[in-house]
Length: 556
Image (cartoon, rainbow, N blue to C red):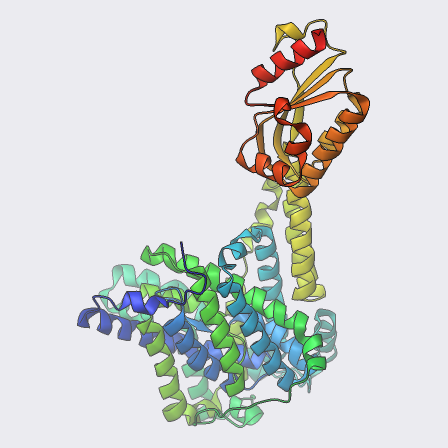
């Protein structure tokens, strides 16, 4: 059993017996994943309404902290596509300073999740909710990139779906043909590269090395060279943001007030919940690749520290990233050192090669995000919906449409409520009450009006108390026997209903005999005073013994 305040990063365990061979393997994996993270970090920041360096600083600072302090061997932390919609909405509604506060608040929440051992509870979120909001976010990412993909001249894009669509249609007359052709070429190159290179590697030895190079980097480099040489009129990082600074970020402490924090509580909780879900899902995928087991609570505490520190140095929310983590694991990483090398690689890029980012076209970044959005969505789940029951389909589709039309906060809230209601209904339907007949126990023949015995099955909780309540309407004249042998769980509402039944029996002069009580049902009934009200003479270990007592009492 873990200590209540245990804080033990996976790095400490991974470094036991660490060898030079493992170190160089981690260095190679870290360099590879650093190259993969470079365009994604900038693209996610730009799509979120931030400067490109915000994504780079997040990948550097949060990436280092998550690897050094986390609970997974190969998890790579950094900015993620799932945060784009939420971050853009917070910046548009509350401003950049309040994004810093909201991110830091989410960091505190994440650390608390891990501190109080809530990491395993994240796994209880239904897959229908996860798929629904993941597909919804993917659609919003793709729609938000149409502006850059077509080179539209729009000063400020709204944060809601219908506003974005309306603005795009109203601005179609400003389409930039050069930007559109460049974006299409980049998207085609990325898709073709990801499809062709792995197939070539199966037959050509020289192509195996190229599988480590992501198509997004190839497209980004070629697009930047084309813009630099030809000077085609498309918007770049330099023309929009003035380039990427080649210096370390400085501490930025925003003005804080409790009044502002009150309004940011819900957005911060959404960031924390989404970050917890993404990071732990990513860690589980990593476990399946390297045959390991992560510590979910340690991972959440590391995510919390990273999200508390990073925003004060110009960063944005961070979480575990599936694409970069999978790349890290498949590139030979064996410890968190690889993630720390990935952060150092990006730091070196910022300090040495930042001026080269001046000519990166935003149309190429949009193409990269379009590809990310497509890979992010679980689109086959829509085709397979007919295989599932109505509650699953309704929950998934509701979360999907609410994510797209309203926002992720509303979608997750509605999805979780719908999933809980569905779960309660299904569990209550599994609880049942069966009457013991004369075929089951012959001595009951002729005593049906005086003695009634019932077997209870399932859970007696607030959603199934009707089973007990209905017994009050058909009480026998002398003795009521309830068999709890097959009852797995009784909650306080169920225990209170049983207590009401006991009081009703006493008022009507009916003896109540309970039998077969297992540990949990007996414990809750004892604490609620039901056992004391019954008395030891009305408790029986088995149904057979209880029926003997009932028949003897009825005949006496």
